[in-house]
Amino acid sequence: MIIRRYITKETFKSQLAILFILLMIFFSQKLIRILSNAVDGGIPTNLVMPLLLLGISDMAKLILPLSLFLGILITLGRFYIDQEMIAMYACGVSKNIIYKVVFFLSFVTCVFAIGNIVWFGPWSDLQQEQLVENAKLNPSLAGLLAGQFQKTPQGDAVIYISSAKNNTIENVFIASTNHSKSQRPNIIMANKGQIMTDANNNQIIILENANRYEGSAKLKDFRISNFNHYQGIIESKELKESDYKNANDVDQSSLSQLRQINTPKAWAEYYWRLTLIISVPLMAFLVIPLSVANARQGRLAKVLPAILLYLIYFLLESSIKANAAKGRLDPALWFYLVNGTYVFLAIIFNIWDTLPIKKMRYKLTNNRLAV
Image 1: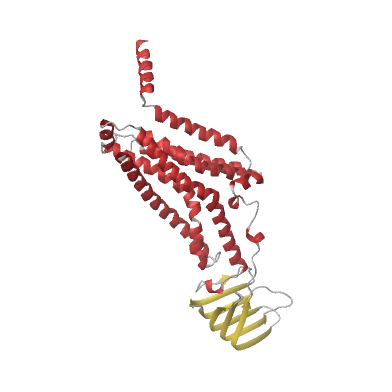
Image 2: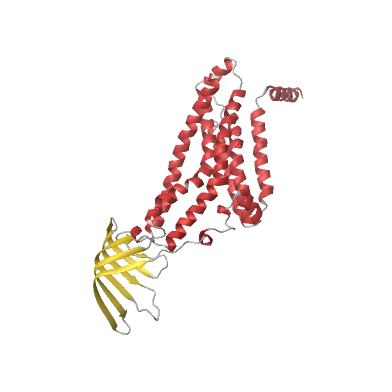
């Protein structure tokens, strides 16, 4: 049907536009956090983009239901304000066509939400943990930031380079801070150097015209050595699955695994994921009657109440998740209570202007006037 395709196309266009805008906002916020962590030396700079792309899963969990909610609200509201919906009803188009369109878009969005929550979310969290742990175990010298003093992940040395380009480094300063009985404190300085990788993925640093200062100021015993070529090898360590995979980590667990863990945090995460899936059709059908508006009321007449209901819903669910993870309340009880309340509101809002309810309201009004 032409009308159905038209409504579907306009709503889907609005949803995609809102999804893109929200994604850019969340993307920018996460980029700032990751870059800040990279500047502080928490993660190597070469992991910024992989971590950012893997973090899309966390963004999509909240963006998908919100984009559909706002897409329906804005599109249907525009139809009512521009009198397009009135013209459709005058031509005999049933309101059921709106529910069919919303059902179709909810189904499509739910497919992506379920795929993200059930599979891509745990997988991406596992991959992020693997990348970070591997970077800690095998720090990349090529990922050092120029112009900053940085500690190695093990905390046993401080490294400074003035510039780095194409695996060539200049003005290198390496100070060993791990003072053991078998090894005295030492400092290595070089004007220039190179970073290479061998066939076994071991990192090789070659310093030209390097000076090594070894000794202690307390003992006044120093040994100064000069090298035309100073070579050091950092062997690659194998990352074990136990280093990054934790069977009790709720973020890395699937829905079935969360039920087996049987801890307050696991149950809170389980019902939170169910909420993210159920919220897609629930919020979509709740917003249909709230999008009805007329020219006298203006565009914001129903927008603000609808957004307020949406915010209350997710703030309640977020609070339930946080408190349930600490064992303060039962997440199952509050899951059914909050979602049941919103299902009831969605039913009431959608049947409020139907003919049987109008007749009932009319009779009640007449009875009150008669009394």
